[in-house]
Length: 583
Image: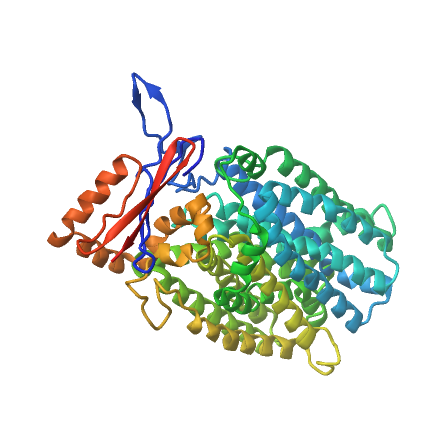
């Protein structure tokens, strides 16, 4: 059973283990009565869509609701949160003089800025599954806006660390961003869409190193220097409030409407104990934790560099603050294209090689990022060499971030928000670990210089990325081994639902997603399947399937040696027939 808006999708599922088979009408139709006939519509506000009403194109300069408006609201909100989180790092040479910060206290504050988002990102995944992306984004921006204002009030190291902790919690906006965009775009371009929005959001970490020193310099002409940096924080704080209000007023959770309204109308159903089930399927999927680890050494590395690059250039090469900030901003500003290109590469290699191509792409890019991180540490004697290497390093590092979210949407359909949250939290955990060990001046690294920290961070990146060789999907396989052709996408995603939930039709979105996910087999594998289905012996099956699709039901004929029992389930105006066959 599907939704009242009369959007229907082709669902064909046949699991040899359970003997169940499901179907619904083959094409998404919108009821447009014209001379007694129905006209097929495949667009929403001029945006071409798939069977889930998800956009199949990205119209970059469009702000049309719902797809592209969500696209732009998501990255802008994430940009603002990133900007505010690393604004203190951009002004650290001035702040540490005013507050008498030591290397250790400044380092601990940097760690606090990223550690707060670890739990928040995991928690946010469940929140989004419950209240939707629009409320999740607006609430996050409005709740953490006071923390940004409070930066102007700190007078000692403890307060500085505490405020950075609370501002850093707003980095959970990354989960809102990826979940929102992932809900709006087709699986064939979701890697690109996620990468563009996350990349443009991450660009806030570079923009703040460029913009905050300029704001400070401008204000300093009117007020004392130690007051100017405090006034500067009113700019990102005000942006938090404005962005939260705009998201609340103009956003939309899904292509078909807001989650709250869809639940009230019965279009979106929530099974009993749903939140616990979502957490279970997200947290107990080992693929989540492999990507958690590897994302810690792509996004985690990026967070670490955003925290230390300005003061590294300021101290190592004795540059003025504005110049050090401008050069340091280059690392983050590369996100304008680099993270997006990682998602695009992931989508591109998936065309011929499917999921296995995505995994190889991710491993190669992230390993190269580790190599250039290591090289940057060895070039501490040359400013030009450091900058050139930093640019190349940033491209690979940020491409790896984008490539991660070309894989993440396929880990779990039911618990996509929790999976995104866990993987995003992995980035913060990686940043905490690398900063604590290599850059915080803690008891674990009392004698390690920033140059040595860069070298060892590169080594750890190369080593941790190797765990990608253990990531395996039953249908699509892994980097080294192919998948099992007897296991379908529907088999994989149906396991997340109980028999009772299936009977209630809660699994329908997962089955539609499974159908769209067949592209992850790759062109070669898909061609082999199509060839097998076109074999003479299978024509009768194809005709039976085609016939059943036309009337909106799918029945599973009993075999010559077996019997079947039919259980019709009627939901609103669509009837789904579930047939249990015994061989």
